[in-house]
Image (cartoon, rainbow, N blue to C red; front, top):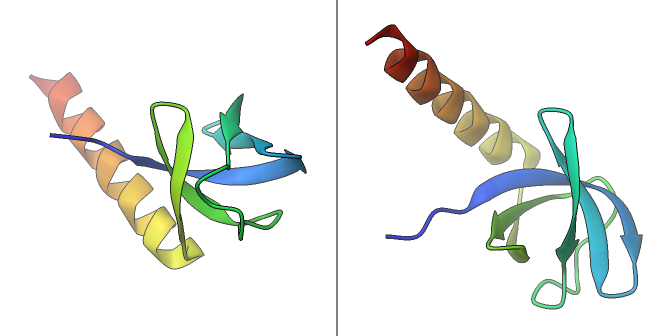
Length: 75
């Protein structure tokens, strides 16, 4: 099973972008998503942006992931 996390693109330089999630930033490859623009959300898998998603879908996914984490902390 693979997991891709939505992250927000905060800067772009060539085939790399700086992406942010929960205040953490990292450099990622956008070679597979050349259409990405500043401010877009991308699905990040092993350091590669593998698809562009709309903001509503990204925020819903992040909300669900936060709920999973909070449930696992209770037990």
